Image 1 (cartoon, rainbow, N blue to C red):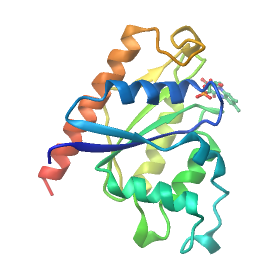
Image 2 (cartoon, helix red, strand yellow):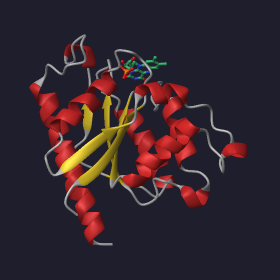
Image 3 (spheres, rainbow, N blue to C red):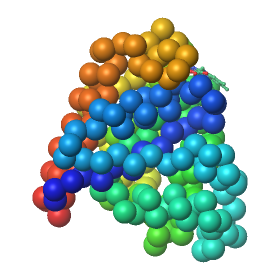
Image 4 (cartoon, rainbow, N blue to C red):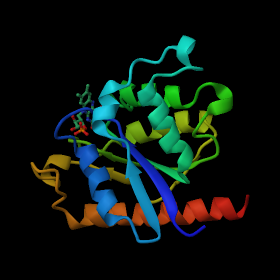
Length: 189
Ligand SMILES: Cc1cc2nc3c(=O)[nH]c(=O)nc-3n(C[C@H](O)[C@H](O)[C@H](O)COP(=O)(O)O)c2cc1C
């Protein structure tokens, strides 16, 4: 495997989302042996609530999401923390992607998580809850490094640029570890 194809998406619809800022930074920090493609925020806004009656014939925007996930070798999720958990819109997206059972596009994929929060814990509780759901999809979450960016408003400016070198370094380390993890899992079949 030469180039690792990573598919990324965020769990916020907020215009100045810190979590999308992490993803945008990740695109720039992706090493040359990988490519990070990010689901569009505009498309994310169009994703309807999951309805199992439609799982065999999902809306176009869900098809786009599922195809992007299918084409990728691994997944990168950037999630806010809402009330000690990850946001409902992210759960909704994951539910669409996981159905029908035989077309769970996340099945067997390596996955890395990042989070940013205005609180001091950086969204770590959301990450733990998200991990639990990812296990149900038979994904392979990366354990380290943990990228949970607390006090995000002091590290990311009003243009969505990361002004904190440590944060950038953490993202870089996460990407490298995800690429390595993806290669290891592929090599072991
Ligand atoms: C409904 C709601 C619940 C929240 N709950 C938490 C929380 O449990 N822990 C936390 O650290 N921040 C919490 N926050 C603050 C978020 O960390 C903050 O709004 C952050 O900017 C959201 O991510 P975003 O910038 O990517 O949209 C909450 C925000 C909202 C809107």
